[in-house]
Length: 369
Image 1 (cartoon, helix red, strand yellow):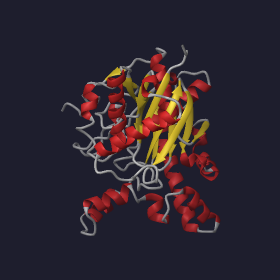
Image 2: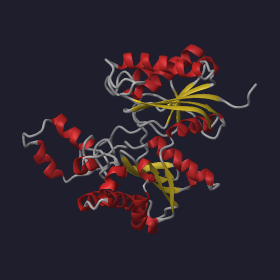
Image 3: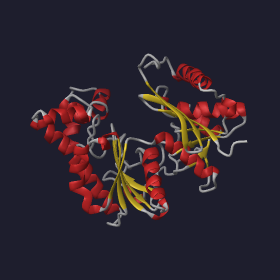
Image 4: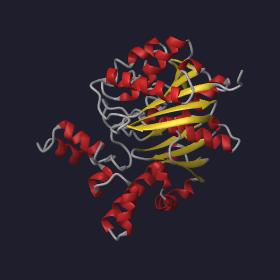
């Protein structure tokens, strides 16, 4: 018998689906399918149709590489459409499965990882988990208050990749993640800058609700009154204004591209406005990192920069000029979601972390007033 665990990793996103076979933390096979391509349709009539297509795709991929679903020791998914939870691994139970039909509508594929993994678990008698899904919320109470008593801040960030690079940094330096104060900057199509205090993400910008730096596709934080005037100007429907701020804001709105490489090409060709816009985005990331240093009371063990845009040498050089005085900078370019799912479940299987029970009750649902 092998002394490693065979793990099937399933990660559905809004624009791509990623599948992986791991032996413990070692990736044996990973595949990414961009939605809207010849291999993966961009639209389905509903999530049932999408799930049926994905299950056929998974079984075909396994068969082509000499695996069967019954061969795996564990199934793990990113998860989605759950109530707010604490970080770590959760055994997928009936309550979590049922919640995927209650939350998130009938279009976002994130919930499919939970549904499909649970189905495999029931059929083959092997455990299925989610790890550090998008609904993780570990904010401090003071981080939740805004200037309006009926609006509270909640945690919507790149939890899976943020946690993985934080654990990776700790492991590579023979340290414990739960002993560290870190600022993690995930800089990709969305940008989240987060204070990790002794193993918990105690504050960050909300990437879904429009906080923080502008990004390639998102407007980020905006002055409230001009935005309200836009909303009531009659020039936009609610849907149109939301799409402009979260799908076609940021670099797209200013420069007509969401690709930092294209924006940097414009800069190299002498486009001054492109330079100001990109430098403003970097400036806003730096300001957010500075605010997270305040959250940590200046006790910053490291600043970790990750995400697709962390591959830009120009961005890293300018950002470092702004924030290097806050603490040592470590760069993990790209994203590590698949590895994060595998390593997260291995921490549980090795007894390094306790598995959580999903109850369907929000970890935070408001203040008693």
